[in-house]
Amino acid sequence: MHPMLKPALRRAWRGRNTVQFGVTPAHAVTLGPMDIATGSFLELLDGTRGLPLLREEARALDLSDRHVDILVSRLTEAGLLDDPDAGGPEADALRRRAETLDRQRPDAAALSVVHPAPGSGLRRLAARRAMRVQVRGAGRVGAAIAALLSGSGVGQVEVLDGGRTEPWDVAPGGLPAASVGERRDTAARQLVRRSAVGGPPRAGGQDPSPAGGGAALSLVVMAPRDGLSVYAPDPGTAAPWITSGTPHLYAGVIEATGVVGPLVLPGGTGCAGCLALRRAEADPQWPRMLAQWRSGRRSHGVQACDLGLATAVAGLAAAHALSFLDGELPASTGARWEAAMPLLDWRSDRLDPHLDCDCGAAGHTEGELTSAAGAPQDTMAG
Ligand SMILES: [Zn+2]
Image (cartoon, rainbow, N blue to C red; front, side):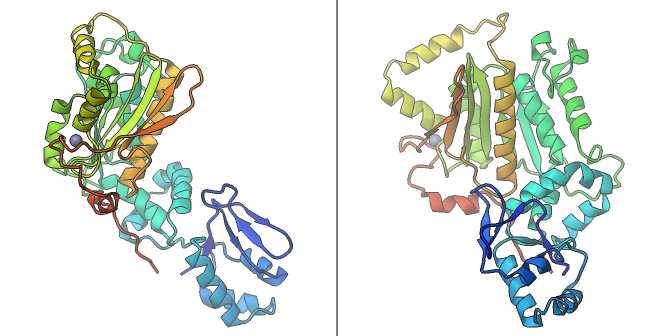
């Protein structure tokens, strides 16, 4: 073990004998009382020294071996220590791909803040390589989500869409202007490949990634160009995912409103069917209007889609997707987030399961969700 204070967290003395690690309340930790010598000792925890050398150098600061051991274990318990060698074989494999890791250093640092055990942040990052995600829709939102997931290290990102790229599909971070007139799915696949860190993950067979073509889908992201299919998702489209237990996340823009969520864990959280039932209960005229909106869809019309809002929706949706793939349950789980122009304040609505929906989520409790996510569990390494 080569203890290293997580570089992602800024350190500051809070008063004379307390140290605060981290700036923002979400992850900041304070430790104290701490004397000046111990404060100086913290500078030695940079991942270059093993415990024997740390104890030796601590003696020069008049700190006992026992003091060092207690401090290191307290820092570990507080989730403040990383270890440049920890995280298991997948993390080691990522370390050997230096260029890839360099691209992902900020992502690794972010994950180190979220996941307390030494090496667990890097292990989660490396685990993304085995994930398979399907993005349905390659417009301004869908293509950007696919690019973001690929650039975040997800090993297999498939994009499904029809037709050819239109000028209004083009977006920074999404489909390029050069792809106008090309098949949308082809253009999106090229975008995914260009965005991938460390090159295409399955090229040449040199990569022992377990992400084979037959791997089960870790997640489906429903990001169609038609925002109505996100705002009022069709339960029929989602039925195969409910049956197969495939988690799916909705994201899109309709008119001047951006929507992220719900992330549906089949049988665990409210689904498109639950949403449809709740809406019909709250507004008896809803089904009638929905039928008109669906049938009145004009194929030649260009839908409203603010570029900034679309990019924000894509970014938030990708972050929620990654959080889920990393083993967490982000705030879109069983809820949807909406931001409407011009104020653009994100608001969330819970989507409780409906008893009449055959997805079976009603009657389940929140506590059962964790196991449903199929997340890798933390293990203390080293
Ligand atoms: Zn349901």
